[in-house]
Length: 356
Image 1 (cartoon, rainbow, N blue to C red):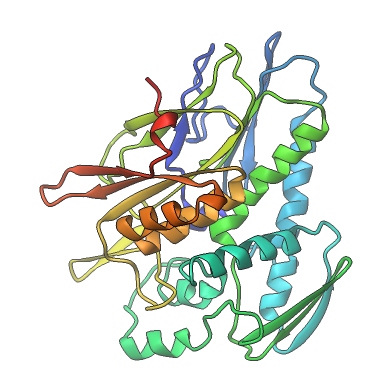
Image 2: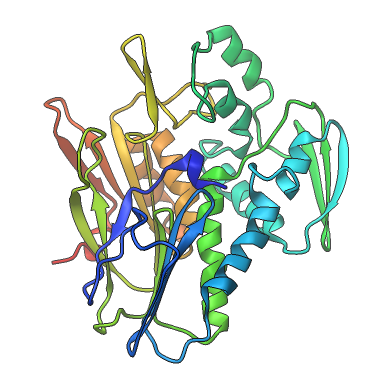
């Protein structure tokens, strides 16, 4: 289960067809068929999913999708005690575990790459801090600087420092150097699950479809009207009674993920504490960036970098995308200005995606 912690449903899709599909959960556990394709809704990872196949003659069923999600959760969900990642986190020294799906290895390799590229702004070993700051439960007492520093001693995803890991075919050999070291792929796993469904639909012979899980999206080909898929980006305000679209993007054969700090937070002593934690300082980020929407070639990449950019802030994120053109990233950043309004910033390549 990832969505319960993440609550990253900051994107919703505007599908110009006979219906609108939203990530808000309406119509979940539903199958809609037509001569123009099939639409499936359901629940997974503590959130909802929606799949639109804009083609006929599909053999894809909700049961087959749910089976994929079950296998995925057995590898990466921290809410399942028997999952691969839960077993690793409970271990106190060395452990060998089999992961026939390979999902853990795929997630680890992608996470290590983003960790290195962002100089640790994306760090899956932040899990002890997440627990310490109470984002898995209600927070009664704020962490002191001493408590933050004591937890930071066990936060570092660099191999060889706090842990070692080796992969031997389907086996994972994991060795902790301290029992308090734990990992959580919450900031990337939901995007990876979108990629898993993407590969599944491609293997089934489909080339025109839309996949959304908890707000993370990938689209292929064209929609039912034969045009690019259109995705709405939320206005990043926490006090809106209804969701409002800040902008609409038009894309094909790309993934979209958004991370934001305005839906998951709590207020103590008049101070707002968001769920986006800086792995370097150990405290919630305090800058003006409200949301980061990333377009990438795959959804795990978009998901991971969206989280990293929320840590880095607006200027550093724009500079990063410019300096790392080889990563094929584009980003759309929404920040609060001094007057309480919303300020837009975007990478050089993003304007081409904005719908006219």
